[in-house]
Image (cartoon, rainbow, N blue to C red; front, side, top):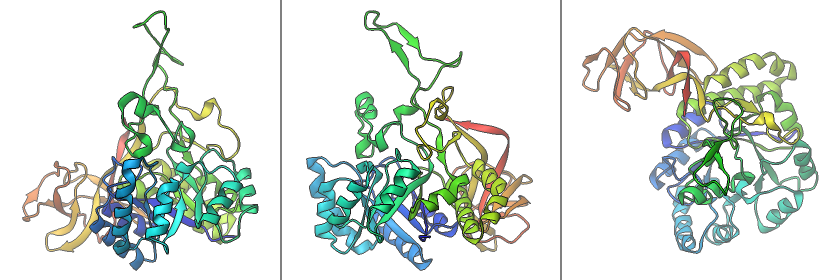
Length: 413
């Protein structure tokens, strides 16, 4: 059995540190340019360097995305950016464009290069091609079945690596190559500016009746005809490993630290349990499923892994996320005022919340005191990103996450 890497996304330095602490073997991040998540917070070069240093100190790798489909005007800036990355020292670049790949080989000849899913890698011939060009790893297109991935493994060099998405949002378009965003809004999804038109509600207009819009619907609420369920393979770790996949990739470079911690921690335990014994993995399945449902999700699908998706993989009545927990903050160092946190959502003294720990424990606690940065007592914490100090009447550790279970499930657009 090949050694399996858990690859986790990070939208910021804070989230990178959470991913590392909560079980990632590797983290993928984007700089401020040339990645496909331009709307994410992303990393300055200084933050990237700090993140790489933090990850390496914990034995975790960092991969940097530069996976846009470049236009002519992008290429000079790419060369400059790669020169700057020499000082940062990531472990690999994730690239889809052959022009950008060529520049990377020239500027960073010793850097490991991974070929993004954006390059539509659907067969072993493509893998063989990229191997000959000097790529170490190729990310499978989301349209592949496990049978096809197994066939790729059988027809590529043993030391070549396969990376595959195991959890997260699915694109309606071919492995992310979507033109809808560009067509409707002028924002190019292939250059990092997707407006997610697959989540919009649509109507039909007949050409001889301009201005008369007819809804496309399954029921009185309408339908979202491009809106896919999210991928979740937590129940199929054995099959994923048997296919010869080297890296299990979680989607979500726009997600919160709570989401990243929850998904990373759950898949970490599932992988480790299975490596210990399949019986332990099966016995803990209810826990995995419960934890995955704690963070935002759209309903789940197994995508293309076991055959072509059908009408049951779409969500027709809503474009929203379901959220069962609210993210309150990450625990920082302690001083005489209490444990420092940077608040994310409102909570109050006397409220029962939950402390989420990297080892899998979820501990209920009551908020005894909230103090501001000057040590003044507060009844509640209403201002996002406010520096606070809390006392929960228990010992906490740095990077514990505070969250609140919602009495009613929250639906987010």
